[in-house]
Length: 84
Image 1 (spheres, rainbow, N blue to C red):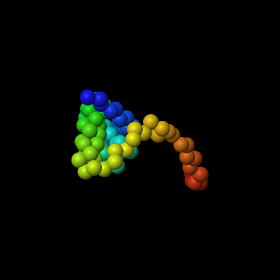
Image 2 (cartoon, rainbow, N blue to C red):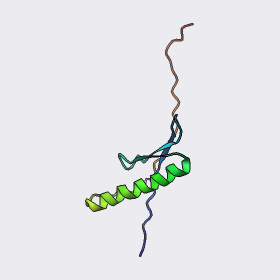
Image 3 (cartoon, helix red, strand yellow):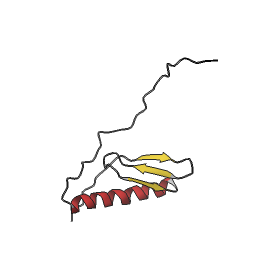
Image 4 (spheres, rainbow, N blue to C red):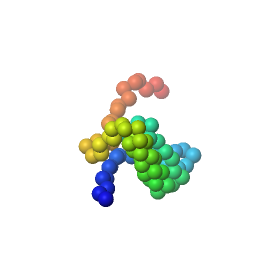
């Protein structure tokens, strides 16, 4: 059996109360949480598998791996006046 590997970017956001939220932008609504970064990575893998399995079950198209997308920083200068 040949296995197809899909790759999706995952955004890991540290939470103020601890742990990490994992967000998969290419799979809308695919968001999970882990107490550690490793837990969040494992949770993201499980969530992505479940998401793709649901798409297959409902005969919906599976988004392609998003190797061209990336996250970057965009500087924004606050131009509002500073009052002393």
